[in-house]
Length: 402
Image (cartoon, rainbow, N blue to C red):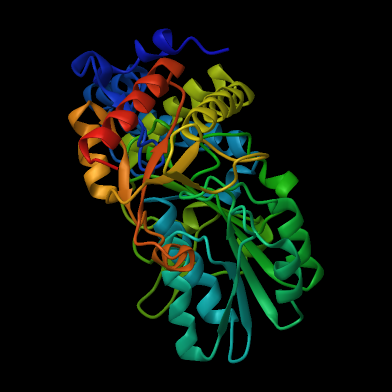
């Protein structure tokens, strides 16, 4: 079991905010000093543009930059050539849209996705409708799990692309992505996994999942903001032209044509966010030292504890599975207290949560609500914090007279 108090010592924000209970980890996570120190050290000792200079610190910067790629590719079990740096999961999805989907999906082709998707895995695909591509949405079971029978019936030979979150940022639902990928492939479709909420919290193996694309963000897994990863199978990347174009991704350029360089740099134009990418590598080091099985077990234990306590509060409704496989995200409503009012009251008691539609407005409409309050856990959270959370919710009932 984790020693939450010991882990918190690595996170300066908790030294600066002694009473802070941070339950907004699905939005972004706090950063350990190992990551912050790595960022400062890089800028202080070897700040130079990567893949350009041949002087000493430029070579050192490039080595650290590519070492981070090796760390992260090992973390998800991909080849180095299959990991492309992006600004985050949202940009990664858009790269797939502009490099692959717009060129390969045509009128009457179908995309299958789910009603629980984050806007980042929903809005981009709507652009394809102007070309006559149809989008089909799979609904949920009553417990907030994905209706797999409906998904299987929705995927047909007309389906060219299936895109689904591995873990819902609202419901905590963990989808059976290996099964979903197999259904897609059996019908000749490619499959994308939005792993922004899963890679930080559990072991994710792209080879085992066998997905064609997978996206994630660094800031949700102890790393800096503005960095993310796009995994794609090498045989797919080799056939694609880049969505974004410019310098550093070329082998040769003439006035009227360009020859692209090798993978993965072919898809990385311009000066990358190299310092933050180096620091991201240290975030992965930190998680690997903890062990992702241990991370998952810790969150499972916290979530089970929280769910048991929350269900004892009258007039409180939880959205998402109450049993079985789920992540450390709990969305709820307490009587008729507005989600923003609830979040403000919790903040007055030093508890940070998210409120609103959580970038999942179609899901909110499907559930018949305008928004929820959401608590989400990570490695530095403890049961004592959940106890304080429960006490504060009970206090809210008295203050709001519900």
